[in-house]
Length: 194
Image (cartoon, rainbow, N blue to C red):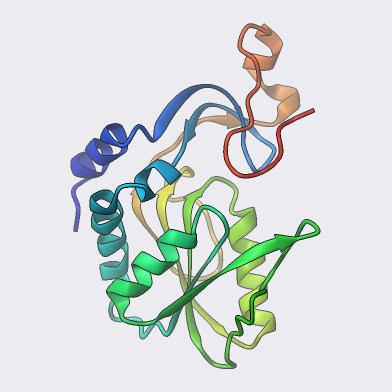
């Protein structure tokens, strides 16, 4: 198990933690953004973090690891490699999370849902719904960074490499918007704000 100090060291070395004024995928605003894609460009970091996460689920008979594109594609692969099972990903089609590319979850298959960063858990909930509708069993949710500080609840075991509380606000309550000094930026894989 990685120490919290080592995880923070990796996040700093990889340049994951950014400061500014960010529009998160959830629609909330924050003064900090965790660009976990920077972890997965470095095989050493992804190996360490995903091995740690996989070890937390080693006794759960995981048969499939699945995560939403884009952030969790490499992560699903790396975690599944450590668990010795298959992996694939969901992706959006016309704004709706779906399985494509011939991927299919088998009824009764024990599935670990993974995500790089969780703030509100919207994408994870969409993936959980896909697994359940296909007849799969969601054995747990694994995340690299839990921005809720361990408060998120998906109705299944949730395990993270690190849990940290990072402040965020609804758009109409954002102090950075009220100040008007720092422009709003939409990092990540979805479209820029209008």
